[in-house]
View 1 (cartoon, helix red, strand yellow):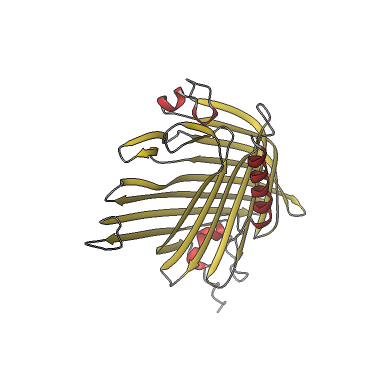
View 2 (cartoon, rainbow, N blue to C red):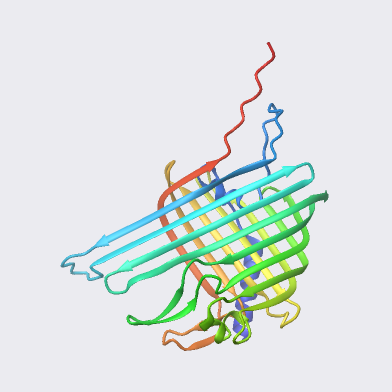
Length: 328
């Protein structure tokens, strides 16, 4: 890894650790609560409430058409993206169990380029904790990440190179550690013992040793240290920012090459059912090789994904319990 790349990653980690950020109001309830919010119960409600479930659904659509347009451009362009984020939180005494699921997919179609994928994510996080005092939880965390369909690097309009697919890669992570949650807006999970399995199900990708697996094999086991930072805040009555930073070091192979996964989401409520969202995702993995514009393979590089859209947003959650009726 060059000095420039090391510096870039260190700066990213430093700024991410300070600003890893924030989320939530009603229409954006999922984005805020998907990072471990506590269950709030009406003190007048004597019914024991141990589960809180809900989510957010987003649908963004854009269309354009040109005819004899002097400024130029494609004759037609169409983009569609959808996101579903679900949560289920359990709280009973000292025990807590937080579950979140993110599913996202987007496509873009233009006259000159045809149909191409703009977003493709699936991310499941399940964290069980036991309160040991002073805002520390003895916790176990499971995470699964992959995508729905094939991804390509487009050398030119007629040539594309397969770079990924469903379970190519697939990341399975199981971690034991301590979770520090001083408030509803911040959590720091630290684990010295984490097992991670990288799966590459596609034969052609496995054959070239994609995503760090040995050539011809379909998986690789890693054992290392893992840190996950989550932070959220309301920037205003209608704007919310939420962030997550995951860091993993593999004891078994080049532990100094830290894998970075960072997500940032800014959500702004325009009306009750319309929202604007900006999502920025950063990934650095020394085992993921870059693909140049001519289709040749290069060294590892910082990956950046930026998605901005405005569209329909629908939040759904548990129905609120009514206070018990006064005795007659």
